[in-house]
Image (cartoon, rainbow, N blue to C red):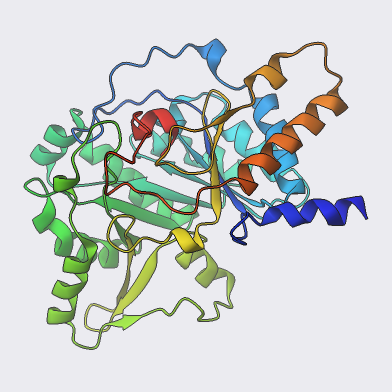
Length: 345
């Protein structure tokens, strides 16, 4: 009976099922993208959650019905034990899926280790296919390494490209990315940039305009309806667990995804909470409010059972109190001032 009562907390106070957690394993990043502009991190290794602490939190999350986990950063591949973290989370009874988001720069050399750990899929962030522009956007000379990683990743994992288009920077590359996705066998998804850490909403490309352009090219554009049954494992991997809307382009014979946080707010179907690299739980990106697990994890006077009980209760609280919606379009209501790399992408 007790276990059955716990499952109630899979739903928040607005009756949304919360079954997905994004876990940042580091705030450090080897890129300094112009729209994120991460400064050198002051974070120390000792401030990061340890692998054992991460796994302890995930075990309690699974007890509450969270079975899907995304490993993020910063750049998660900068963390030496990232593959072991994946392996340990996958070993928790009840875990359904562990995936990872990366900028791809270090990915090629990590692919075999991640595959052996049981990783289920990879999202690679890439915002331009032009070498000079890549250097300008990321402040790193590394497009060749990322393209090689994409080619190798798709041989081992379901692989998606996450593309942020910004006005005046790379917005004209949308069709190039669609054709790249078709040619290389990866799903391309266009993400509307969310203005955090002082970035400006004027930079955000409206996905509604992109879809309009697609309809002009392809009048028979087909949208995957939200309630369309997805039967096969391949389809589940293709379309994922998140808020992306997918369209099929008959002429190009390819699926394209859109994650439209700004102009097609999907809050009513949001199914996630976040864990930062330093042990803060967040119900929504928009707000500074967070609940810390650090004190619980560092209290050496607690027994293991008591520590797990307190983590369990904190997770219940964060799930239940998850805000109804974000207000990222209104900077006065956006109380979170940290950048995405500090929170966890």
